[in-house]
Image (cartoon, rainbow, N blue to C red; front, side, top):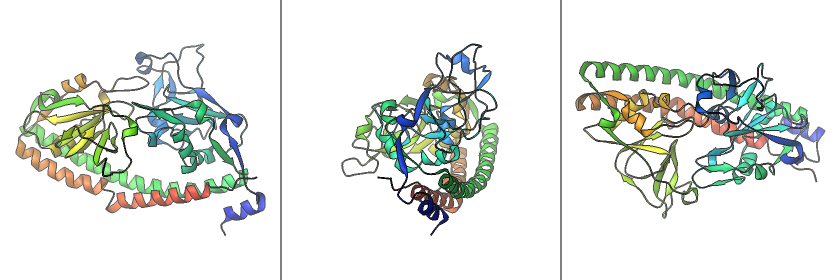
Length: 394
């Protein structure tokens, strides 16, 4: 019997109390009345959508700033607040949480595409909340609170109906201790993998720049590629797994979204995300696929090796051309004007092949460190969901 099981038997043998969020907490909205200019020369920190989406605990020292004037009535975050991403292009990624686990040293604001959950009383440890709201039991309820067509949005009234367990603080602390060990081990693997990726990115930069300088000519991306947004499709038409009726991969701004019954491309294509904090990310696919309106579909207008093109566009960091606003985006016309050095096909094929090999080593989840990291995450998710499953008191 584990220490957690012993604690539960000793402290709450009859089960754990469950509460509805609306009974113990309230929501706070993000920034209001801000324009694009307010995010270009800011004086106060704010939590971006990407920050909330990517981190269990809010990164409160991230270098994201917004202009706040004296006397403005804006909500600022404090210890224990749970930040919730309010929308996504697919239901699996909507309503992701990030928790403020230490009292901010200065005012910390929230972007307008998220909202915060603030508890009336400290019933949950902040460190416990960061695991609880990412656990499958709560995530499943959050997904059910969301709906939409073009974008999937969380309904706050339905979100506040989510029921959560409130185990004794001693049990919360022990669960945090165990799960922190898992996340520490995962972080160590991620750090090692990140070092290898940095090495790969160095070689990619050197290989592409040296080859381009020697034999390339500078032209705009619009001359090399055709770039256009994909076509809208309702989320209800997208299946999580391929079926006989829906066999075609469907790609959005952040890669594979699921599977659909028709396709709008049948060739080798590259996708560039066009909306959100992750806009500018680059993916590729081949054959019969469906591209949604959240992706810029890139196809060649002249002789291009698509492996070289994928690595070249990735290296160019197209995210730097995003609009500076609460909900960033890429303007296709602006991206077409960006210049790059186009090299002979022989150089493209050689460099594309070499970089594909590097890419496989650091990103293929079936081998090496990526595979070990995937296995570690699955192990963590299994124990997290097991530890966060409680019998409810009658």
